[in-house]
Image (cartoon, rainbow, N blue to C red; front, side, top):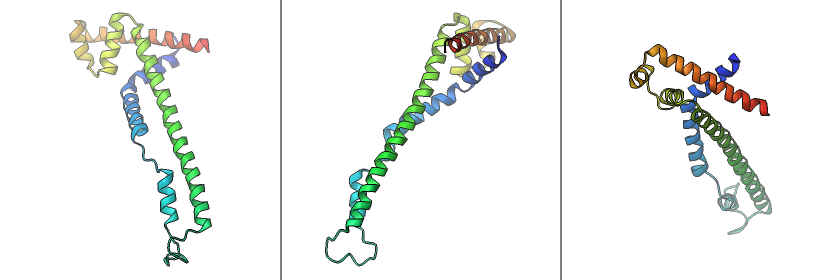
Length: 162
C-alpha cells in the first residue's frame, strides 16, 4: 500500500479533534461575526465634520462626505460578504473531510472501527483500548495498522475516481 496515503490517513486521524475545534470556531464566527451596518457607516460619516467647526450651518452635510460614505458602505458590504464566503468555504471543506473520514471509518470491520474511533476520536489511550477489548497492546496496534491500511485503500479508490 502507498506509504504516502497511509501517512495522509494518519494525519487526518491525528488532526481529527483539531478540525472539530476549527469547525466549531467557524460556526461561531458565522453566527457572531461583527458586521458594520450600512446605516451605522453613513450615520457616523454624515455627522462628522473634519474641521471641528460643525460645518457652514447646522445639519450641513458635504456632498463629498455622502459620496465617501456611500463608497465606504459598498466596500464594507463587499468585505463582509467576502469574509462570510471565505468562512463558509473553509467550513464546507472541513466538514466534508470530517464526514468522509467518519463514513470511511464506519465501513471498516467492527473491531478496526472501534479501535480507530476510541483512540483518534474519543481520546482513549491504547492501554485502555487493549484492556477494553481484552487483547494485548501489541494486538491493538496491529488492528490500528490494519485499519489504517483499509482506510488508505478507500481513500486511494476515491482518488482514482477523480
